[in-house]
Length: 111
Image (tube, rainbow, N blue to C red; front, side, top):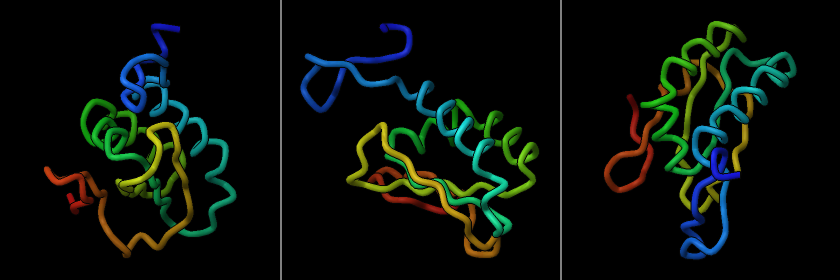
């Protein structure tokens, strides 16, 4: 449990959440599983700001490998108000934007 989770920042540490790396790999498996259902040339991943940071930094090579594996561009959108374990993926046009990483204010900014 401690390997795959971290203290809950919502409740001040009395509970546990999946850790950010675990969530990143859940996203990976979800994209692999669902990519063939996306008819557009790119996939937009809407995630919590903390997950967007992990995908843009620590797991950047995983994201690049995932793009190559599914043959689609991946765009990450940090969504304030999302629970840290919640994410959504949907098809999008590759010309619609670049990979977004959160800026200092937690808003998405193009990279």
